[in-house]
Image (cartoon, rainbow, N blue to C red):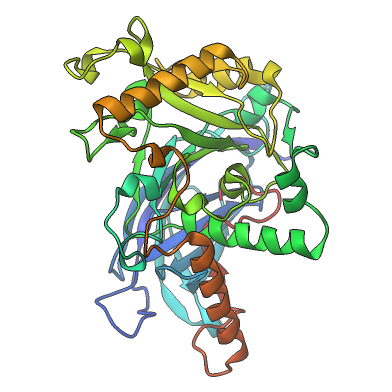
Length: 434
């Protein structure tokens, strides 16, 4: 007999009475990871310096078994490390709805506080075509400040060049169907990354470490919810230059539930064999990948734009392509990519181009020329580079791995490998949304 399915909404309210895991400071920096039957996951924001965090975050999932098991693990975020302190965990079934209180169980069964949430379910339509465990919103975004900024770099620089963005997307599997873009066996860099040799394993290890650091949840992250084109466009305003939309190129990948990207000239790409593999955490396949930039919808695009124009009074379109050597996406899927993005953000206008299209080169050239001549953006910002005295992400990853290995070998270390979790983004196989 089949188990009835429900559409589920969980409001993660907060927690009280968490233990202090650090010897100093007024409190912890807690966040949590939740998963439903190991099939779909959710990771919260980090709440700074508190033992009584309030999240009030909402998670919608469609077509879930009514007796599904929810597991929640709570962590204390430690800055610039590959592992975070485990606080405790609990699990429950979603059959009992309404306000739920759960004891957070720590090491040796110790009570480490109480977690509060509200569960609402509605029967899933019998004839639904929605896949089981389908993420249904909201479309959250997070902007991650690179760990190579600040105390780890000896120079002042523009922070946007050291940031990554992650945006959750709806209905990607439904729209792309069974179509994936596997790694490109003809691309030399990809062949090295995905080879079964010791060299390949070493390269993948470095990329995994770099990905964890770039996408780790921290108190310095920016978070929010996106509902329409205007919300998305506002993410790309340049705080350094009068809060205007920045003429810049971005490298991106799309997987089953997220759109991840950064400026193509980001310094953390230095020493890494593939920008796209870094964003994809060395996934052997992605839904799509390439580059994009924003273009004003005036005659001539950037070539017809000027600084006297008001960004708010001009329509903008997302110019996106399949320029990715690592995954070499099929150009015939560009209309599907357009559909995914326009489906998620009301009013978003998307122009898709194959990477070899002369019209794409014309648009990109005009954008770069405008950036240099009218905004004072240097040519180096379009290419991965570092400045004198900077710590590269590759070097930082190697140092943190060495520190972690020393802690493993030191029996007196407070960092137990059995009781810590890797930083956010190391998701279990098959789990989306983690």
